[in-house]
Length: 333
Ligand SMILES: [Zn+2]
Image 1 (cartoon, rainbow, N blue to C red):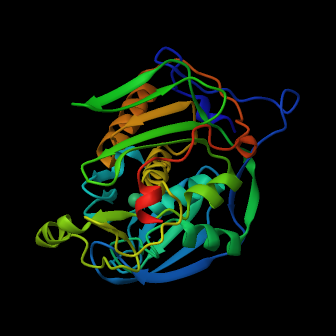
Image 2 (image 1 turned 90 degrees about the horizontal axis):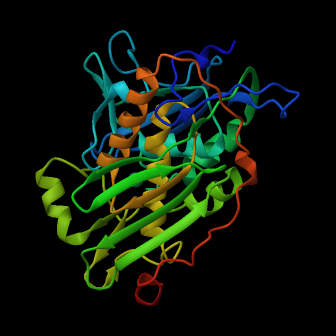
C-alpha cells in the first residue's frame, strides 16, 4: 500500500512520509465520479478534438490515450514521457504524442485529481478559452471520488535550483506550496510583473485557472511559419499588441503572470504528486519548469533509501501575499 515510499531520497532534499491516521487525518487519492467529455480546437494543430476524462484506479496517475490511433496507445503523464517543451508541453511514447497538456494537467493538480484516463480523438488537448477554467468546470461536473489509497506529496527539504542565463527557477522548503513568479516582458507597457500566492483548491479555481494563455501580435506570423498556433484566435488566447490587449478586458490585472503560474502547476504535476515547497520563478517557462521536474525526478530515482512524506494541507492555502502586478492595470483594464 505504501509502495510510493520505495527509492525516494532524503539526501537530495526530498522527503516523503506516509503518516498514519493517528498523526493526521488520512488524505486519500481521488479520481472522477463519472466520465465527462469536452470538444474543441487544438491551439497548435488547429484540429477539432474530443476529450473524455474517465475514472482510473488508484496509483494509476494521469494517463492519456490516443483513441484515434491503432491500438489506442496510452501515454502516461510522467517526466520520462516529456517530448517537447517549445511553446507548450508535449508528452509522447512509442511514437504517439499529445500536445499542450499543461492546462489540463494544471486543472487536475489544482482540483486534486490523482488518477484519470484522458481519451483524445487527436494529437492535442483542446485549448478551450486558453485557460484552465473549462477543465475545472469539467472536473466539477464529473465530481470527485475518494479512493482507498493514501495521497502523498513531494516535500522539498533542501533548495533545488535550475537556471539558464538570467532565467531561473528554484524551490525551497516550506510547509505549503507557495509560488512567487516574476516575468519581465520585452514590451513597452508590460515591464516587470510579479505574482505570489499560496494556491489551494478554491483559490486555484478562482484566481489561477481563469487566466488565459497569451501571445504577442508581433510573434503570430513567426508562430505560423513554425507550424504552431494554427488554431489560435482571439477566442482562445490573449493577444497583446503594442497598445495593449486586442481582446481585453483582462480577467485579472496580472493575468499574464498568473497564467505562468497555471502553466507551472501543470508542468510540475508531471511528477505525479503535488510538490510542497516555495517556488521562486524568474523569467521561467515550460523549458525551465521541465528542467526542474527532471532534476527532482533524478534525485528521487538516485536515492536508494526509503523516505517519508506528509499529507499537505492543500485546502488551507491563503490569499496572495504580494500586491497584483504593476504595469498592465492602467494600460489594459
Ligand atoms: Zn499556458
